[in-house]
Length: 142
Image (cartoon, rainbow, N blue to C red; front, top):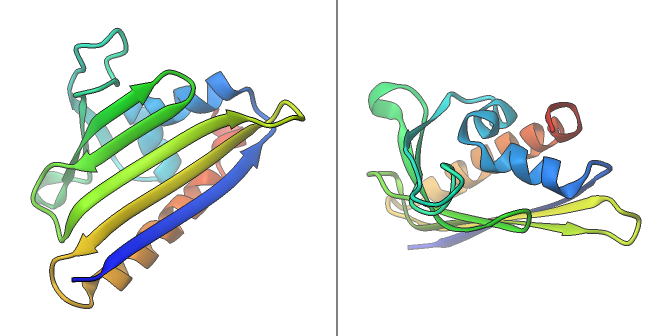
């Protein structure tokens, strides 16, 4: 089994709370990625998108479910895939920081292992392309 890591580091001239709000809201996160996303379980936290909330990405049986495992307003979101998927030990971590210029730095890392040999590279590159394309929409959507 191979381990894969995707790391994306981008800085935006948008206030941190607005960038965080975009990534935190499951529906808006879907618009960012250009994929249908809906929250199917609310968090018990103040924010319904917080720890324990579940989002479904995709349509019908081809959808993936992701559960938020860590949620620190304006600074950190962590999530993992909790439905059957072609990957194992998946962790998505998105950190939000202020830069000295007052911009917002987003550090987005995803790690996972493949289940079926050689599929990881394909999954990794598709995922990375999708996120890199989506993250360019931050200034417009945030």
